[in-house]
Amino acid sequence: MRFGLFGTGHWAAQTHAAALDAHPQAQLAGVWGRDPAKARALAQRHGVPAFDDVDALLDAVDAVAVALPPDVQADIAVRAATAGRHLLLDKPLALATADADRVVTAAAQAGVASVVFFTGRFHPNVAAFLASAAAVGGWHGAQVTMFASIFQPESPYGGSAWRREHGGLWDIGPHALSVILPVLGRVTRVAAMDGPRDAVHLLLDHAGGATSTVSLSLDAPPEAMRNEVLFHGENGVQRVPARDGSPVTALGVALDQLVEEVDNGTRDHHCDVRFGREVVAVLDAAGTARAEGRTVSLPG
Image (cartoon, rainbow, N blue to C red; front, side, top):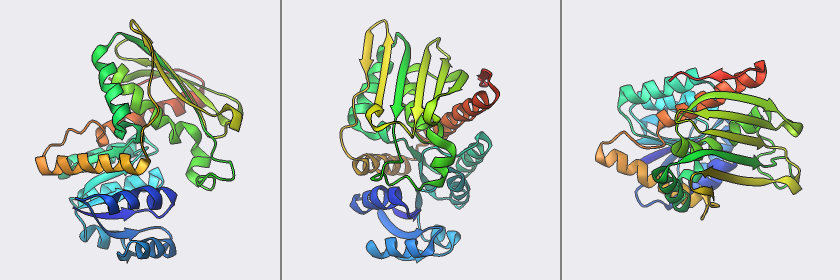
């Protein structure tokens, strides 16, 4: 399957391009980026052409892999789906529910397969844990703490404008939601409160009656950095295991599953654009709750 890579940043180069190069059923066929010089450099590294025009790259491929800021990704995804190209997208799908809706509609109308790369969902040990937890049931809720720091000298994301503007809610919030939604079900209400160092704390009601708390930050003190997801309920407390493997390996799994969707003609992947849209809707509601100081209900 011929893939066009959209994006030239650290994640595009170190994860997407590497995974596409390594995958036996994928062929990296070209690169497009907002910075033509970076696109040429990345394309040259992998021995493929760089494209200055989005539609020209779409014409040359069967599918797209997108590693761009979410607002840019949404527009590219709509154009790609409309052109009949399958979608390997990154989280979050978009920065507004309306934009996520456009992607979902375009994918449905074109009948293309889609996978949104919520990294943890494609690590086999995490996926197995979530499947087991969902099957067992009896959970009263979850406690999520994801305190990261992109502002340390060694971080490749310190210069990311969209992360600086939208913070942990939109950057690591999708990771949190991607692991609690499969176990606790859809979110019906959201409350939010700000904390020190641009942290945000969410209180979520789920359709099955569970309640979860989510604490997020991209500017945590190094000594306070944590990544922990705990489920609690009738069966006690269980911790989601740490990811076993690299992001490149996980993206290879996502590619496996996208290729399988295309080959089988199915369009029901558990992390497709519809699930990506569900995550965006929760984050969008959380942003409203945060700004207005009120609880926000999500439509059923």
